[in-house]
Length: 244
Figure 1 (spheres, helix red, strand yellow):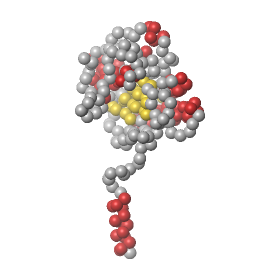
Figure 2 (spheres, rainbow, N blue to C red):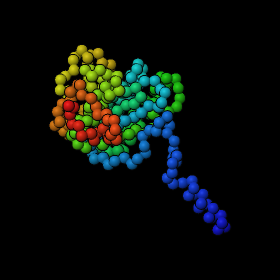
Figure 3 (cartoon, rainbow, N blue to C red):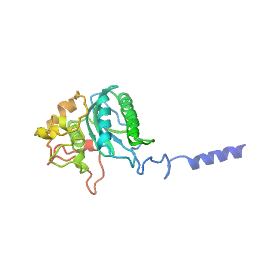
Figure 4 (tube, one colour):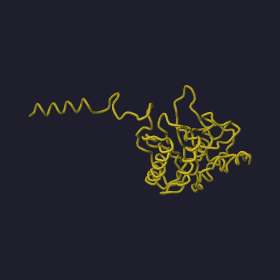
């Protein structure tokens, strides 16, 4: 009996614990959002949320897929205690700026948003399987500088990915209805926009007043990007308050 007990203990040490290659394998070709403990969030702090599409699926910025995303955002703009303030739709991912009382509200609202959207997209594409295979990632916005950086990142994200001209606004985002531009985009550009998802008005100090302390957004500003030779940092924690 003692020998058997000793063998069980030996096996446990061999097959458990931290080691190279251990753990659940990523569902996509590359590892997705890590399962780290989410940072603490206060009631008045917005969240910057990122949701990634499974590999190999059509672009979310085209035709029927874009319409489904915008319809889902409109239906979930103020639901389960979470309010979608701004958004951007990119080819294989989504970014949202949201306000919520707590993370439980965010979890319920994100499930109510993504589950029916995934079913609708699968029906459109005539397929089965995961559409959003990894859990959503979020960053807590706690300072005016972070809030401005997050607004710039979401509204100008199409420029980061090279799908929007620097002098234009992204028509697959809430940029056409954003009221914090230094110079208002042309009426012609706004009229040419697709149907913009209904978004909730901001109510937190950071997204109404606080971010404006660092100046309105210039339409030519680029979002913060990783610089060569420097480690990646959270975009909301970038020290750049305004473009130079």
